[in-house]
Amino acid sequence: YEAPHRLLLTLRELCAEDSTRPLLVARELTKMHEELVHGTVAEAVTRFESIAPKGEFTLVLGSKSSSGSAMLEAGDAEIREMVAGLMRDGMSASSAAKTAAKFLNVPNNRVKQLARMVADGEGDVAVDERVSAVPVVGLDHV
Image (cartoon, rainbow, N blue to C red; front, side, top):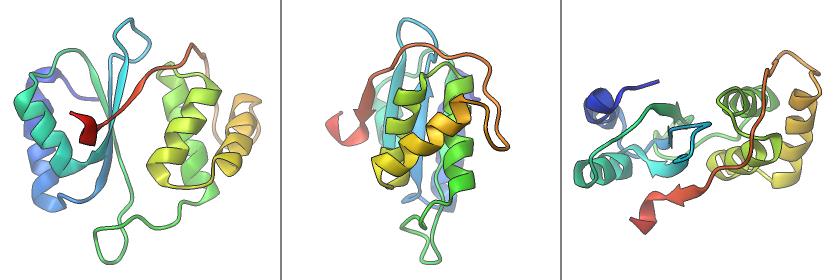
């Protein structure tokens, strides 16, 4: 989690490590002005340099491959953990599955099946509450 006054500092630190790494920035989860922004760390820096950050942020940093620029194939445990985290932050199972599938670049059907397991309490990951879907915004549309 990151406060708005620290968001750019954190993003710049991440950018110094690997600017091409995938990143999901979730703003104001479970509130009226919910927003999900996905892209690379460098794209997030550019966006939040031009638009002042407001609200509470949750950052989900994607995996990196041995080349450092592309993600490795996500495993079931990683998918379940991401879905559960998004659901704990207030997303519905369906919205969390769609977001995770897009962010992790894995087939929707695979993620939906794992999201159902998480929602039903199967496996290692537990979720407390769920709410309605949130809009997903790509950094390339800014």
